[in-house]
Structures are given as structure tokens and as C-alpha cells.
Length: 229
Image 1 (cartoon, rainbow, N blue to C red):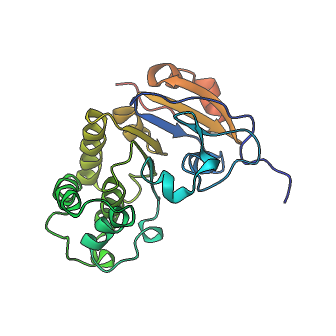
Image 2 (image 1 turned 180 degrees about the vertical axis):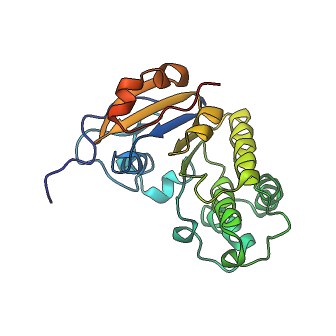
């Protein structure tokens, strides 16, 4: 209504399974951008294409099998009375075979560390466990692309290590991981391509070493580069 564009002239492509981090200050347009990747938001101008198909031609529910989005706040995503039901809900909606659901339940619950908590109510989990519950629910759908919105927020050291393992595992399976994050340590340890946003525009886009060496431009976007190790 104010006439302000949340995204302005953004243009780039992502291919393969090289993990991508999108960084920038609050209000830079990061979450708005990624919510266009599976149709949660619709572009008012321009196009978003996945495998050459315009995102607007399918419902968000149809894209859920292709592009999984893990919300920053798990309470925005969890609504059933057990972890097991959270994990099986999505696959059941797309008529996934029950045997395959069971197989994926074992694989995914082990990967996210909730194999012993499948019958617990999600709201009885710790914040870290809730985060992994939402990740597990998305992974159950076996999407090609997984978007993590501030996944380290509220995580402890063990949680961050598990996140690292999940990203490495998904990458080894040919999946593409995209994150929005303010955690530069997490970004540099897990993501090789960095996109820096400011005021709805892409300021920088490239390999982590190259992007983080451009300190003057990073200063404009209020991003503090990670310490050189």
C-alpha cells in the first residue's frame, strides 16, 4: 500500500545442489524472496521458474513435493498431536505408499534425532526438538529443494552439529539446501554460495570467500563478515 517494493529487480538462477545462503539485515527481503520459490507468495511482476515451470501455474500444495519450506518459528508449522502424525501428514496428503511412509519415518526420525520421541506431542518438545520436528515433517515429503529460515535460532551446540549433518546428508542425496541466516559461522561452515540482499535487491552473489572479502559492500548491508580462520 505504501508503494514500497519488497523485492526490486531481483534476478538470479540456482542449479545443482551447491548449498546457498541468503543473508542481509532484517527487512532486506530474504524471507519474501524465498516464499516465492514455492508459491507461498506470488510475484506481482516478473517470473519464478522451477525446472522451467512458472511457480504460479501450480498451487503451493503441489510445489510442496518439490520445494520444502521450514519456517523460522516451529509453532507456525506444528499442529498435530504427535511427532509421528506431523511426519506422516504431508505424505498422506499426496497419497504416498504406507510402506514408503514407514521407511521414510525411520530414516528421517533418525536423521533429525527424534526416533525416540515419535509419540510425544510436539508442544512437549524443547525448542531445539521442535525445530527438528518441523525439519523432519518437510523431509518426509522428499522434496528436491529444502529452504531453512533461520534454522540456528534457538539451537544449542549439539543442534547446530545435527543441522550440519542434515545439510551434508541432503547434499549427498542430490538435494539443494537454501538457508536464510544471520549466523555467519553456520553460513560459512555449511554454504558455499552466498547471496547478500539489501532493501529488496541483490548486492552480492558468489562463492563465500569472494563475497566475504568485499567488506565495503557488506558494510552497506550491515553484514559483519565472519572472522578469517
